[in-house]
Structure formats: structure tokens, C-alpha cells
Image (tube, rainbow, N blue to C red; front, top):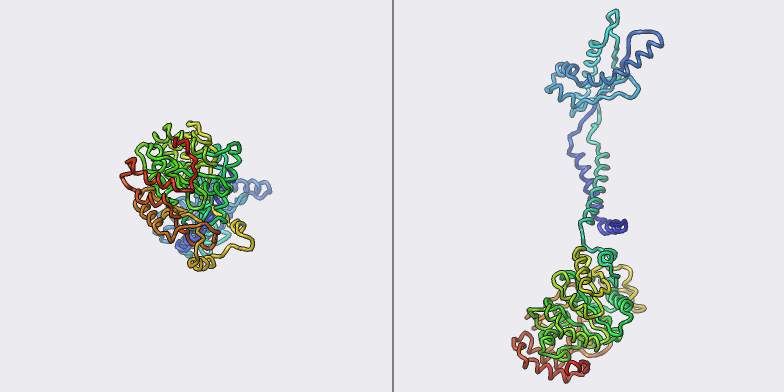
Length: 570
């Protein structure tokens, strides 16, 4: 990992360092409060030689004494010195245990020996220190070499008696507090580093491009609150909507030589938001005046019908098995200018249908009839559907959810597409952190972003206003943040049918009412095709060729879909 990635990780998880540092400081302070106080008393002894009066003799004696200080220090902790102390003070301990509570030190280049004794009782600590000093003095004079006259050559004098300490030597609250802070800081930093090393998710655009080797076409912010409907329509002035327009612009650069654009939108694993991005990208392309078709080619878990609230019982699979023509089942989504081809019934053999000659001919026909065709396909890790279809169009876009997909999964997706001979146009990083300082830029002049409470009251007021009616109906599962249920479920069918059966809620063209857009969407336009499909949803009779006759008859009456697929009819 690079230094920039580590810094980004610390900015993202700074709270871990703060929490661990606070916990460390509290822990250090708490240990100081519960620890038993220990007092230390110190006595000092001075060693010298008793023979010789010349300067040379004194110098030799001082050198000899310094060389013997280490031996005298070791003698302090021996039973020879400590047993008399235990007897004199009537201590209930052994020489070995007593030695553990004694510390001996000799300042460098001196003949001074310091004896420090630690004990929970300050008076006992002082008594033991003084008793050890006296015992050592006696033993040294006994074992030291004698002069010719029989006098002791080494003299030991106590130069400092141990006083009763007034304050404990441990615990040191200040030292423990600082140690806790440092340890907490280091532990928090270690947690972040380990988390970043062990977390193989694609956390940044740099990681996504390095794993795939493909350019970054754009990023899509995660929305701060759950909302219904595609953001390009629901909040067209938001930063998230502008993300899709930027994606559209970048896509134009990488496909500048294409007169008509056909592209596949896929992902590595389910739940990365590929269907949401495909729908919003198609709407952004339609905004620019193009004739755009969105095809739900995810024949395993179709989502487009659920997002848009359109009937999904007849669609792509119906065309591929020869039971309907494309113009029969292509539906115009309200007044957005976007045409949609839903998946139709889920087949038992999706890969075989997508790799069939019929699919190749249909793709050529659709791409030749529209300025742009966007195919929403199944994730790559589980199946090869996207690779099969992407070979038939200009290329593929890989949606990368930074909160879900891992690097090995993304690498596997890229490897599968490359082996299939697919032109990977680029990657789109989904659910990035919202930018805090960009939202106001996309509002109209003089219209500042509203605060939370003002937005709430504006919505309440907007609820009573008539909606503009230019937006398509949005199905019950078209939430911006979550995945809808697959098309064809009973709840979707009933919701779609009920929305179409109420003419009072049908949309009509008009100006955009921004206040109404923030609150809710108007219901779908009623069309003859929708009314005919309402009875066919979920009907087993769809397996019969005659079941499509009402749809074909109503399609002939629709003036919203031109006769652009005449080759297929022939």
C-alpha cells in the first residue's frame, strides 16, 4: 500500500485512534488507582581502605575499592547479609524473597553503595534498609583481608540512614497515564494498519484502476438518505445526478468514433448497484437528446421492471424464443424519452439464449435503430452472461461498489472479460462518500440548499400541490439505495397493475415542479399496451403464441414507438 492510502485510511478511521488513546489513558489511570502503593527507603554506605598514608597508597586503595564494589553489591543480596536482618527484625520471609525487594546500585567511579528497599509499609522499608546496611558493614569487615597487625583493611561507614518515605514510589500515576496514552495511540494505529492490510475491498478509485488496468469513467456518490426513483429524475440538480452526467461525458470520449453506442453494464457480484447505474446512465444519455434504449439482459435476477414499475411478463426472452417482436415489447417510459426492453420471463437457459444467433441479430438491430443501447447484465463472478453479450457491442462498463467487492473478485471479473475478448471501456466506482461542499453549486441561481428543517416543511407543503406529471411511474421497489425484487414477483405485479389502473394518477407532459420532485413521483402514463399487459402479467398462457396478440395489436396503436425494427418484422 502507498503512503497516500495509509493516510486516507487514517482519515477514514481516525476515531479508532482517538478511542484507543482515550481507553489507554483511562486504563493507565485506573491501574494506578487500584494498584497497592509501594514505598522505597534508601541507605548509603562509603567504602575505604585503612592502610597506607602516602598519596600513592591512597590512590591504590581507592582503585582497589572501586574494583571491589561489584563484589560488595552482590554480597548485599546474599543470605550471609540478609539472614541476620531477618533474625533482628523478626521478618516472616526468606533471604531469597527479601533479596527480591532490595535494589543495589553504585554510582559510576565512586566507592558509594546505595541500598534501596521496597515495601508496602514505609516504616518497615526504612528499618530493613538500615538493617541491611549495618549487616553488610559487619560482614565486609569480617571477610576483608587483614593487615599485618591484624586490623581490618576495608572500612565501611553508613553515610545516609534510610528515612521513612512520605510518598509511594509506585504506582507513578503520571507515568502510567502517559504510557497508557502512548500504548493506546500505537494500538489504534496498529488496528488501522492491520484493518487496511486485511481489508481487500476496493476502497478507492486508484485501487480499482490498478486492479483492472481500465480507466475510471466516473464515481457515483452514495445518497445520504433513502429515496425512491432514479436520482437523475428525482433530484436532477444534485451532485449524484451530476455524477451520471459526468459519466456520460467521459463515455463520449472513450467511444468518440462510434455513431451508435452499445454498451454492457455489469459488476463482479450482486448488489453493487449496476442496475441503478444502468438506468440513471440511460436517462442521462436520453437527456442529451439521444434516442436511448435500456435492455434488461440480466435473465437470472432482472431488476429493471421493478425499478421502473413497467410490466415485465413479456420482454427480451419473449423475442429470443420467437414469440414476440421487439417492437411489441419495447415500452416508452413516460415522457423521459427512454425506451425500455424488460427481461421477460426468466428462462432455464440464460447463457444459451444470450449466445444464440437470434440475440446477435437482435443486438445489431437495436444498436442500429438507437443512438445508444444500454444492456444491464448479470454479475460476472457467478456467470459468464455479461462476457457473452459484451462481445456483441462496443464494450463493457464494470460497476465497482467500494463497500462490497473485493480485489480478487474484481480481478477475476477483469480476467474473465479479457479472456472473452471484451473491450472494457472503464470502471465506475459506486457509493463513494458524499461531497460536502458541492451540492449548492448545482442549484439554480438564487436558490440556496435548504437546511434539514426547511426541507421537511417544504415537502409537507408540496404534498398538497399538483405534480408536474412529466416523470414516469416508479415501481414499489425502485428505491435509490436498495435492490428491488426481481421482475415478475406477485407484489410487483399487483403494484404495477394498481398504478396503471388509476387514470387519475397518470402523468402528462409539463414543466418540472422541483418541490413535487422532492416529495414523490406521479404515477405512470396509461397506455393501451400497459392495459393489455396488465392482464398478462404472471399468466402461464404466455407460453402460448396467441397470448401475445393483444400486445401486438396495442403496439400498432402506439405512436410513441416508431416503426424502427421493420427488418425484424420481415
